[in-house]
Length: 353
Image 1 (cartoon, one colour):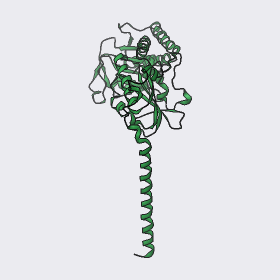
Image 2 (cartoon, rainbow, N blue to C red; image 1 turned 45 degrees about the vertical axis):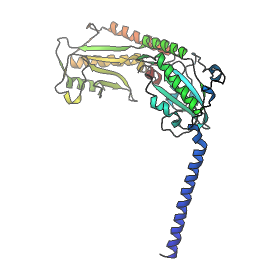
Image 3 (cartoon, rainbow, N blue to C red; image 1 turned 90 degrees about the vertical axis):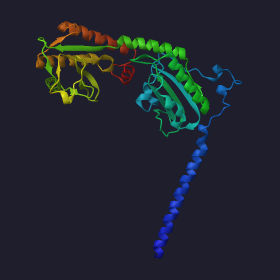
Image 4 (cartoon, rainbow, N blue to C red; image 1 turned 180 degrees about the vertical axis):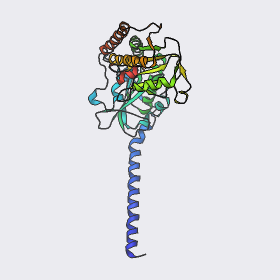
């Protein structure tokens, strides 16, 4: 080995040692600084009987029902955190004793599906002015966390017991990590959930137009799919044909009246006794406009497949009948906008899921 080769080898080994040593030192410093955040302190005042009463330990979370957003647009990093608000969610805020990663909520992550409604965690990072959605394996260090439980969706209002379980779980976590906590009243939150569910039920409408052959003949599935495709509709994995907007959201869809799915591998043999076009009013933007589009598709399909447009009682739908349906949709849209929930918005899709 030449002197030059020996010198280069020595330099290379020296660089490796330096890099390894620097990495070891940084890792050691990290554990010294943040390792304490994961230790349980049995003397925390939150559960100490000799400390002040609970009502003096907790700060009440402000719940102004006139405010629709807890996170304002100027302080939100992602849309999901911007959707969380005091009218639609039960929100508990933790102020951490030390900056900590998402793993500090390990117990919560393991139980996040136990409450019957969607949960959301949003965090405020070190030296950050924006809230972001927190996932279980996030390595970001957070100084504040907001854990929320959605109050209602299409399955109904959240159960009072589930609300209490959610609160108790977060209280236990706050105790273990010595975090300050701001928690709303469970009974008040449940009342809001019931009211929200009642409002959702009042505007939750699915509008349908049936297409039937006057002679009672069967329709070949392959002909149906072909005719619907000419109207810009696509057969999807759910067995329905969908009309999509430019962002890929379904506007309305066509199903077999007997609910059996249309499937690519059976189109040549399958038949249908009738079809139904469906519009999920609160989940589409501009539902009155989409109803007009659906009516146009219905008339074109009726012409191409020699079908009649009928209502649920198999009475032929006249122009006045379609106008009455349009008026009902317009009334739903107005009610939603009056509550600052736009049909088809992310918030609407969240509540009507």
